[in-house]
Image (tube, rainbow, N blue to C red; front, side, top):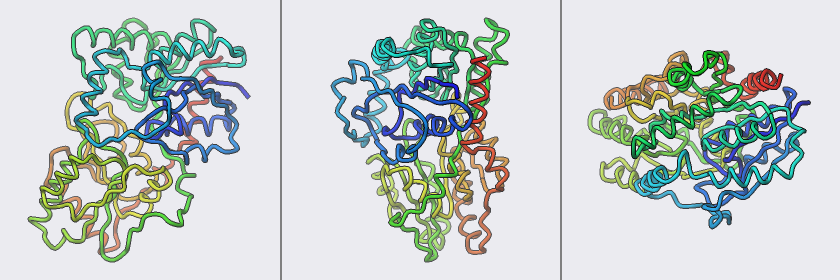
Length: 430
């Protein structure tokens, strides 16, 4: 059994989708000969917590080292859930942070983590794995490589320079982020991205400095854990089979990822297909900001909506299993959105349920185009979205809703994907 130091600033019991990938890697790595020690933070005030995630790890062979976050978060060290009611305020504060902190506001943790590691036996490790964002995780991994000589594998859950939700206030901000990205891309031993658009962006920007770069970057998509779908909740939310056609969205809305296309599609159905409208019920699992709820009321469609807020992961999976159809959207067809690859999409695939996907041209769209249960709608195509919803109603009445091909679904099994990570770690460690 080899040993890997696994750097993940965001890790359970902190919630949101960003913790799923590192959590499942840690869960399955020991099956492939790698024992992880997670380096993360003591939970501080945050938008969501989910203690059920660590329940999934009981009896697994791994350690967790928790350190204090940087000074900027020390005042928030007491665990508590922060309200996420106003997207405009969250977005404003995020942009202010991007002005003052490059690449992010986790630099204080980087220093504290190095001080913590100075008191540990680092000779026990064969490699370092870091997952980002925050991209400070990768800078910390390079510090460790420089000091202890350990090989590093860097995992990019999102793009860095190309990320569509990053605001470059000045030319200096963009240039500095490119410099830091290059330092990481050229400095680590292997890189992993979740899609080809991020991979190609790295090659385009940095391959002239390293002709071997393309051969050092692997794509491991997001995935789903079959174990999650084996749980049966005794008191989960109800989805009555009374002629209602249920649609579920699991996840949060933020930045340009808004429910407005859905609202317009429902409004279109109410106007043009009045017999279909009362049969629809849209369940939102995750934060729905007050401004969006008000919009639904103003459009006169709030009677077709129900909101569960942020829930523990088993409840979110329960909703995917019980619904008729799942749907999601990714921003707009603008530069940068081709790099976006939400993890929830692969849990949708794992549910085997019909999918309506409002996506631009990106890897997610390409993956879903190969899934027989998925229907793709272009962002802004309100009529197309409405007709896709109506088609699901018709198919349910005919008992002909499409389901996934099990062989296509297997490609995104977290256990199988972790096996690929183990091979990369072994290659990096030599």
